[in-house]
Image 1: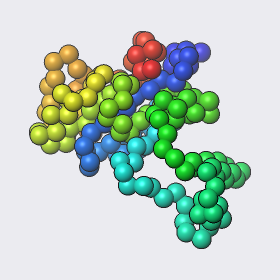
Image 2: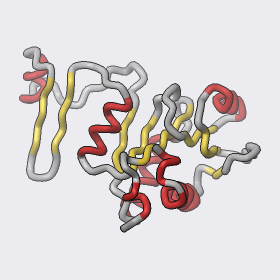
Image 3: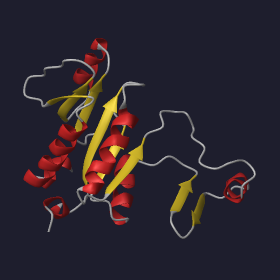
Length: 177
């Protein structure tokens, strides 16, 4: 059995940074490496107040929501989506992805939550973020960044970041929970 499958609940790692720091790009490069290594990855994205739309006006699911349904689900041969008409706590979303089979949950955003975090620093002034978030496990930056006692990676070192994540899970599955 793979070591990351020993997590009783899914392992969780937050990717945090200011707007346009490269969080989504990093995740889209990291996910295939982890999935390719046999880790079933779930992802949660925090939409910082933009009130996302997941469906197109006029489509059936959109019409159900417009009619007042609190929950709308759609499924096909290859995928399923459920949307609730209310916000949800991160811990609940993590639990739901675990129930759906995620072994590792990567979270984009939710800076104030307490899960382990990789912080992205694009500009020198972004370093202030290091003082305002908890449970830092590493730094990913666009330039040189040396933080005492924290692993530091360049934004282009996707292989190194993936290896770091896999090693942390293997060495101590609870450290990403």
